[in-house]
Length: 171
Image (cartoon, rainbow, N blue to C red; front, side, top):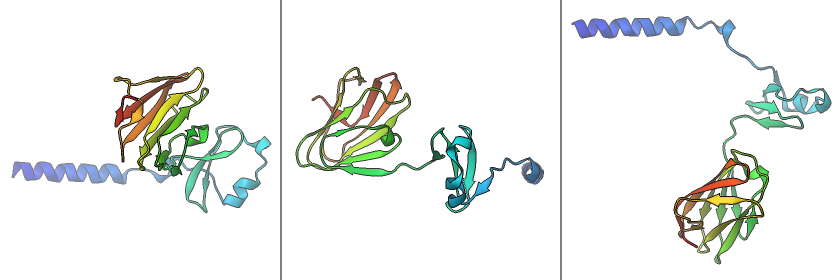
């Protein structure tokens, strides 16, 4: 009986607490259609401005030159040969489908926090290498996918320093 009373009290307290959220205190972004957002002259927009796109049902932040979607889901980009990462790959997934071994090059200058996932979906292994000035680190000095369906993560942890983890083997 005592436990039942305790459960009832907790339920009443929780229900009461939720019911007390004031909708006037919720943060709301200004909303506009995609067309209206794109019509705003970029010279008049302050970097960091936020807007809710009522057509796409997504929030966007102005980065100083363009509107970037907040909380974007990663996209998958298939590759079939040697490839050099670019800033736009950040947060995405690259699949490598090649019958021969290929090289993924990490260039200098990618932002700290840059991260990408890679997957070998063909017979060709993916060797991860750094361009001039880039240091790649892995606890066991493994920088090549281990075989079919191997995956790896690449993260920039400091200026031109990248850590690689995953299903890797020695070159």
